[in-house]
Length: 293
Figure 1 (cartoon, rainbow, N blue to C red):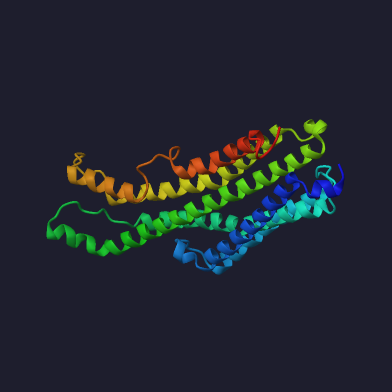
Figure 2 (figure 1 turned 90 degrees about the vertical axis):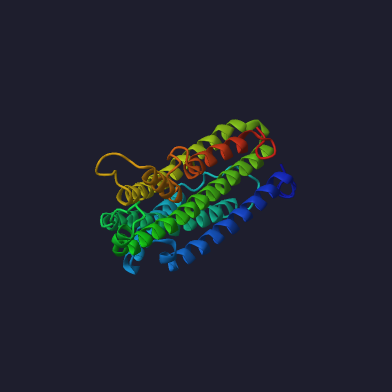
């Protein structure tokens, strides 16, 4: 196919639009992450500047290794009649890799914060469920500690939601970019579909599902352990082993506040992290509007 005809055609135009949107998304993600790192306490993270810089160095080194690997493996781009194709696809990939760096740092910092919170949770006194003034007075010393720990956990939860959402958006952008590039390749070489099969997009989605799960699920599980520990410390089983209605109700209210009333497997964050890459890759591979197979 003639280069001018291909460049002016629909498949390549679609890829350029998708790639441009992906780059804009990655840049916005970087700006958002930097803002979060500057105001970590607002998001519940406990970390010194030295710790942040250390994690940033590790994340940058990891991304740098991937970039070097990409340069070594250059030449794997599809055969398309486009000038500087490797530069174009490489720019999208490079922006995406850079965008992952600050979010990896945030995930690691959140993990460390959960670990540090466990020590503070051990100091939490039980919350009395009686209404007598003496019982209320016994809580005064620990009320501030309860408030501080629960508030920090809720802010960390907001950060988890943000991290998982960003990972999901990044994965969707990467998969759709890959699938539209495949559509452009098939438009040029309809007889070489086996060189870029639809199943490759599915594998791509499965890979991202594994990566997103490794990053997100352990962090969500660590947060839930902290939250459950707070509930257990605040409302331990009564000494006589006979829970009262007030005890059950108070414990249930705290579990709802800390999002513990939904199991880990049924948690929307887990589903978003695992299912979004798989569903996106399936759609991108088999819906004609995204990737003609």
